Figure (cartoon, rainbow, N blue to C red):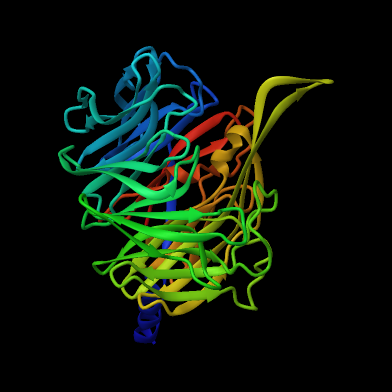
Length: 482
């Protein structure tokens, strides 16, 4: 009898041992310095993390400060460093990209100045070890005559994060062709190659172009022609520092929309969503969103569309419009692409019976979907996620979602139930998520906060995730372990 009881206890212990429990502990609360302050977590480790925060969507030209603060494993603040983005004339640069790699942050910012007749991209490098910031380095520059015709910059990072590209569209000139300049750098800010090219397309005041950088160093541009007509089509342009190759990208029944570049076992591929061109014309500033009819996978090495799949009949795809690629995970022979509807609008703020000069901003997140391909482009499943949610002004930080691949499963952080949720897909190891509970005010009532989805960061090689939560005007750092 004792042996039977002992065996039963052993079985229960083994069973419970495989029932994953995700626990979260939180820090003391803090408040933002401004409602326009935006936070992100960088350098996550078993010994702590660093925060980067700065003002978002501000119009101040004089100063744009970046603030970095180190936190220990107990989520207590340590040393802090503040520095300003560089200026050109009296204008402070706008932050374009922050690249985190090898214990450093590369701050890429752009700035233009009519008096200096320049539009340029700057780089400043923060060292985690030295807690210091390098002097500014100008990475790219071209001349301008006026702000209304100042050209554009786009930045692309290779999937392996060994290099980045800066692509500039030269200022609009009537009755000429579009001209681009390209610079490709490694993460030590060494220039690998540069190229200036006049294309066959007419010069315009704006373009519908997306830029990608392959691990090999090739720059790929997806150029949309006649974006708001039924004749909409796409060209793929590939730059190598010396020449440009142009190929037809779209075809009958396939007009690619939003997409991302991924590396699949050493092969560069584009994956995203497409419009079939049949049901309606793509609309300008559509309040409902532009049509998407399915998902695709395109092999850049062979220039072949290896997967094109329209929404299945079992999927309620009525609201799957204006889909952005939120994230793509490549695991073995599986590709998991997460797509989410995203719309943005603004209007002048109404105060009583009058309208002020201040703007209110409105954001729509969702509906959303998970697309599961195999690496050959075969569709394995469409999985619906969350319905649409509309947010206003700074409440946008609670929108969207964040994904991690943990314990052999796809885990999704969101605020789908009006507080933090942790959903699991593609594994039997669902686990139990012990949500953080906070007492935000003196009332003593505990509550479940929201997650700031874009702050979720995994600690590699450790069973640990950091993220920030919010309730009212108070925020908490959180550490999830299992």
